[in-house]
Amino acid sequence: MYRFLLTPRWWGINLFVVLAIPFCVFMGTWQLGRFEDRVQTHAAAEKQPAPGTRAAKPIDDLLPVDTETSGRPATATGRYADQFLVPGRELDDKSGFYVLNLLRTDSGKALPVVRGWLPGEPGRTAVPAAPTGKVTVTGDLQASENAGTAGIDATGGLPHGQVGMISAASLVNLVPYDVYDAWVTLQDTGAAGALRPVPAAAPQGTGLDLKAFQNLGYTGEWFVFAGFVLFMWFRLVRREAEAARDLKLGLVADTDAGAGPDTAAGAGTSAGSGMDTRPVDPADPDVSVGTV
Image (cartoon, rainbow, N blue to C red; front, side, top):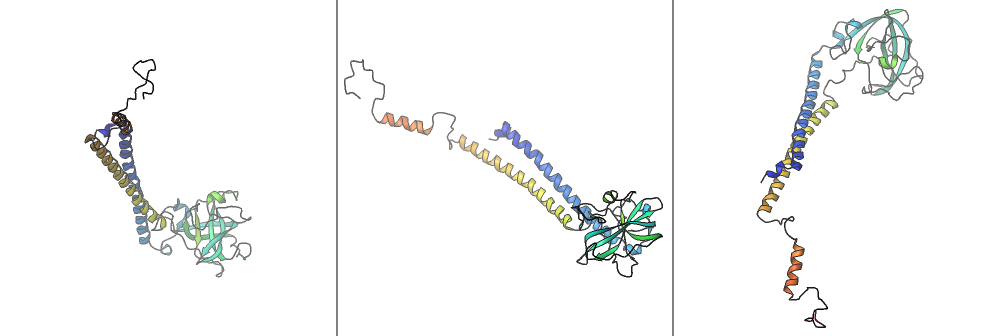
């Protein structure tokens, strides 16, 4: 009854099922692993002490920025150089902008320093001047922003002196010196309250955010796909087996053997009418005129 499983058509169906189910299970397991990683990093971040309670370290000792060093206090010494404004940044549900200065260190490399946040629009709001001379700053370390960072302006076309993203990739095209692939945000603005400190953000890919629950949802979807493929395979096998059984019992006519029902009906009608439907030869003497 199940010999149809060895036909070429069913070989293709079986091969698809054999490949699809492990693939769906693998993808579901991978998405589940991503969710578990986010849960673990979230738990680890909650156990870490507050940024202000940890000892500050030189910036070079904390690079590259990862989930362990992100938010750690970092120190650097140098002189403030170019200044940029970062529009479209919110703080406490208010719209404003960051004040970003590049600190030229003794090595010549510059560290992006967010000195604080101001409400309003860049160019229409007075910005406190940066300290002059050699300074030592201490700020919470942050990784360079990217297109997936919340609040950035990646559309471009900003006025001169403004940048939409705090990253070495964007700043290195605006200044004639190297830039650290990181930045710090000062918690002590030192501007008589004019600048408000920007709190450090959690590193991307950590925490129980929307992306974490998306991973969990994708996990369920992949496992559902695997079950659906298996269900459809069993359903197709059952239908094929039932059709083969009905054919064997004669419940379904085999269209490949003998004439169809219309042909049989036509033959029965001719036989039952008693009429001779053979062709008539006019030269036959036994056939009289008017014979049908």
